[in-house]
Image (tube, rainbow, N blue to C red; front, side):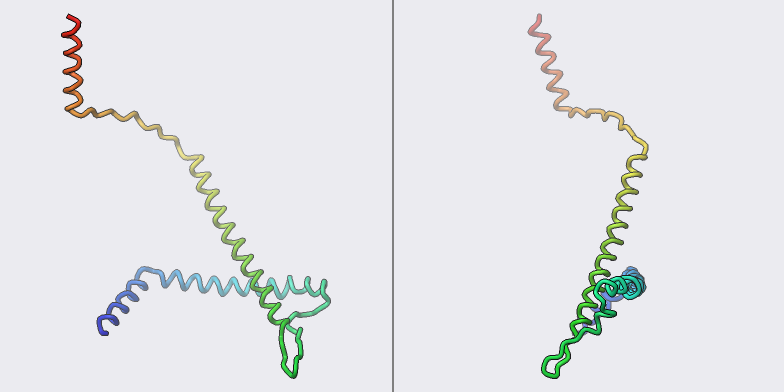
Length: 144
């Protein structure tokens, strides 16, 4: 049991020392900030547009009452809309970054100096050279 704990903490120490934890923390902070931006996009821009189309001020107010039970389906719809917008925004951002990276790589490749390789000298093994010499000598003997 003690060996497992030692192995676990050794692995944890390696995980922290490799910098993965810092990358994870940065990604978390950016994700939280991104969520706030998307929440503002949904609440301040998209939902007013939906309100002008549907006449409902907010989906979260939509409720069904069944046998004294309150079913808040409007809140569920609101969360789905926010999720779809967040997913679309993340997809668009990642796609933009990937396309930009591919574009930069293509430009770098197109503008890279063309380096022509010098023809490589063919190395003929010694046994092949010897057989070639024997063949040539046999041809000379046959001509005489």
